Image (cartoon, rainbow, N blue to C red):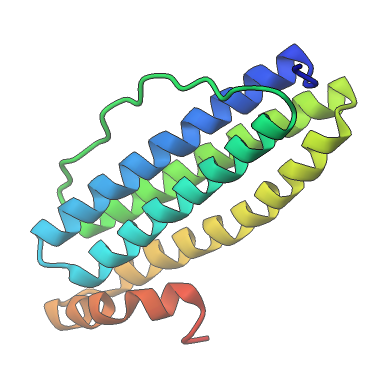
Length: 168
């Protein structure tokens, strides 16, 4: 028996599919970086793809616990062609900004419906997005500052440590 108000359920399902799409898109970014011999960025984006799937798993478990089967929709083909690593980094940043908007939409629907359990769930996602937006901004800035082949190569070697907080 479904225990989630219809508008909140619609928003949760939309966000569920947005997270699936983000995973797909991060995988495409990983492929592009691998093709450009940017192995560090390729690994990092592959890791991000897995994190998005963990978000999908979290939403799936939540929906099932509340008596709703997640509704999957077609996942659009991700952008696969880029002119530069900076364009890739900016694309990832825009994806995270869009994801934040989607999470806020779920939370706002839950507030309006007084669905307190969804509000609690979304607080975890809201906190997660603060981290995601921060690393995207840092990544864009680091790529912008890598102005020669040597600095870009060094950045590629260390990007996972930089963005995971190991270098702070």
